[in-house]
Image (cartoon, rainbow, N blue to C red; front, side, top):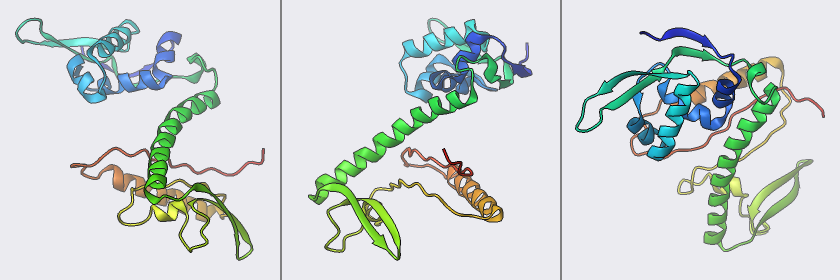
Length: 223
């Protein structure tokens, strides 16, 4: 039995599983490809029990199915694959009941990971530098800037994010900007962001480490 090309999820339990960050994480390795429980543990760094329970749940929900067995000493390895190569989950079947709630839920998950990485590097920089971590308030050419920094800056030392730009410093960046752009400029920035993301997404990792990157752009709406 070959997998169907497209599947629209209408079961609320299956939808709830797929829209959750944990469910998405466990389902992705099976989408349009074969995967075993052993391979799942290696890909996700989870325990065998966690992988087994996730596979059992996904099979029960009709999201994956058994497609083969790999002979070995003892019990053969079971091979699973998604029931369809493309899966669509309408938000109306998800427990959040709204696109906005789902965005916030997922954003919080990634934001926590980003914050933990930033905080670790910032506190480490404070320990190594020996000066207090705080906020600098300053006005430059009529514009007020509030920046994270180590020390007051009276000695001419740069702000924290500028400090991280040093060649020997960790690759860290944290910034929010409210930009005044024409539509053409905003579209150009959107394209630049996409090209930059694609460039570094296809790098040969080699001995590289994982980095959390957040990229977003939207017209500003006054609350």
